[in-house]
Image (cartoon, rainbow, N blue to C red; front, top):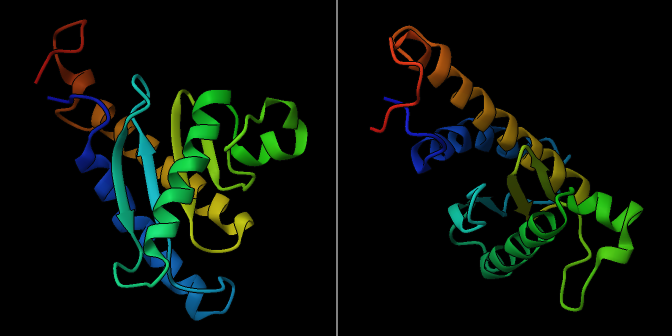
Length: 156
């Protein structure tokens, strides 16, 4: 039975998104093949998924920190980090990152850091879209939640 957003769903989404980063770097759209993806729990704001494009990239630790900082901006404001930068800079507090690359919709925050900020954001949106699609599939697939006789979401 479906238990909601999970690490497994995030991992599956990441495995779909990761080849687009590899292709973007190979075609010189992205300035490197590196970065960190972060997904926050929509209820607690805790990191429920984190992974790296290249575990051995020399700046991996920096990308981890910046991706989480971007995610915090979106968690605290309820807006994509670029929107805060461009439309609502009055919401910045000391020590918040100024970079775009985190997105939020329906309380789900996804952030990426490692390439150009506009593409960090595109990667985050792609990850968020795949997470939503995979969660919707859990609801509507044959044998999924909607096929249950119960009117309620049952615990796994």
